Image 1 (cartoon, rainbow, N blue to C red):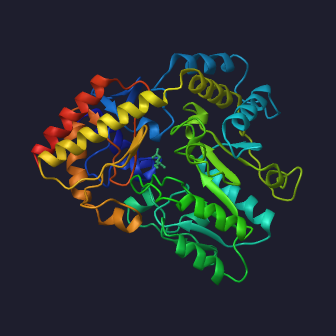
Image 2: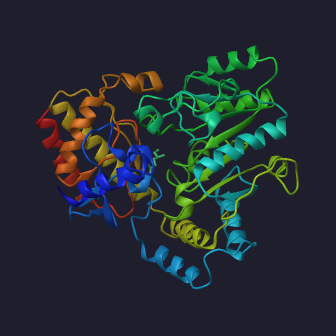
Image 3: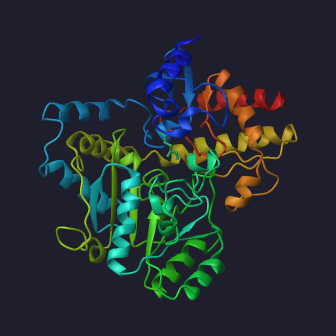
Length: 425
Ligand code: HOZ
C-alpha cells in the first residue's frame, strides 16, 4: 500500500468519503486519489514522490502556476501584519478598485469567501432588488452548492449521478426554472409563461462544469435582451472564466455585459475568496445600505486580499493570455489530430487555457449532448495519463486548465502521453 492509499484509508474514517470536495474522491474515474505534498509551477508532487504535470490547477485559481514567488511574497508580507482583523482593511479597498477597473459589469463589489457564496448572494440580491422569486438556470451549469442552484447541476453533482441533490426542499427547487443551455426560445417561453415574473437568469457564460461548452452565435446577446425586456437581473457566473479567458472574462470577450457577476478562484491567488459585483443601483440594495442581508467574519481577509491583489496585478503586468491561447490551441489541435489517426470520435472545445475532451461524434451544445459522450473512454485516458505523469481532472465533466507556467515542452509531453493512451484503446 503506498502512502496515498494509507492516507485515504485513514481519511475515510473521519472525513465523509475521505475528501472535502466530492470530485476529489476519484469515484468517477476509479482508483484511489493521490495525496499531494507539494505544488510548484505546473507540477504536483504526490506523497509517494510522483511528479505530475497538472491540468487541474487547483480547479482554476493557479493561472500563474503553483507557488508563484510574487504571490508567496505578498502572502508573507500580509502574514507579518496579522491574519484577520474583523475591521475594514486597506487591501479590501485596493481589491475593490482593481475589480471595478478590470471587470466591465462591476461598479461596486462585495468580497466573500467562495464562489458558492458569490452566486448565493447574487441570487438573493437579485430577488431583493426585483421583488420576484423565480430564477432561471441552465441544465449542467454548476454554481456551487447553493440550495436553489443544485437543480440539474453539473460538476460533482453530475459526476455522482445526483444533479438534483437530496436535502433541498421541493418548495425551494420550485423557485428554479431549469432550461437547456443554448436554446433562446426556451428562455422566451419561460418569460412569457411565468406570470409572477422572473427575478434573474444565472448562467456560466461558457459552461465549464459539464465539460466545456460554448454559446451559439447570439445566445448570450439574446439572454441580455430578454433580461432587459423583462426587468430580470442577468447574472454571469464567471468564477471559472473570469480573469482566465482574458482579464475581463467572457463579458469582455463578448461585449455582453451582465447586471451582476459572481467571481472567485483567480482573485484569491490560491486562498479562499469569492466576490460578487455589478451595477451600483443593484449593489446598493445590500446591507448596510439596503434591505438585502449578507455578511462574513472572514470576508475581505487580509491574507486572501494580498494574494488576490498580487495575482491580479501579475495578470495586468504579464498578460499571459496570448501565451495561454497558443498553448491551449496547440494542445487541442494536437489531441484532435491524434484522435483522428486512431479513428476515435472526439471533440475538444477550447478557449485560451480552458478545454475539455468529449468522446463524441458531434459537437456538444448542451447538457444532453455532454451526457451522451463516452465517459468510459475519458476514464481510460485519465488512468493512462495519470500512470504516465499527466494529471487530467478526475471526471469527464470537469474542465482542464493550463497555467502560465506550462511550457511548449509540457504540451509535447502531454501529446505523447495522449498518443500512448489512444493507442491502447
Ligand atoms: N467545484 C470544483 C469543480 N468544478 C471542484 C472543487 C474541488 O473539488 O476542489
